[in-house]
Length: 219
Image (tube, rainbow, N blue to C red; front, side, top):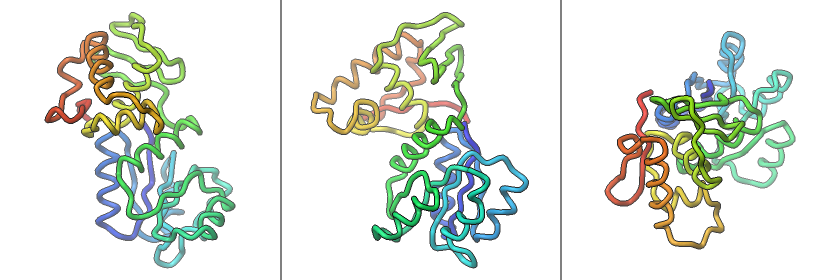
């Protein structure tokens, strides 16, 4: 997974974000003021920055200007939702822009998109005797390739990227099938059964109160 720098002066929000980053397997660093960003980037390899715009001493836009040469992907996080602010952020090189308040699942999804875009995240995931190779879209069980459909692989990737987080059927459809899916949510159950059978993950992929599913993995 990736090492992510969370720059947010509201400690409760910073803690919430980093707690969820840890749950899905990322490592992280914290900063609460603009100048702290430069110190952390000097001493740590950073794959992505979650950057609040309204910071003490130096705001997020100023920070972006000063670190532009480092070419680290940035997702801006802010309560400022004017078109002018969004345009300014993108002109400074932001990879994405999310408005407070936000759902943590949306933030995690946006993080995954940016990491995949820059190929900064790990290219594979290993748990038990299962290896998932994202770039090759290949799954191995005991080093033997397993035949997954396109949709099964996309659902598996969503579960892995959001591991240890309970996802409703509706959220799984949204993330793996797309916003325009109009079918029955029970199609998720069929695909989950196939994944459990093919990967031997009957105990890994948990049913949560008959509402959704969670892939349980120790961090």
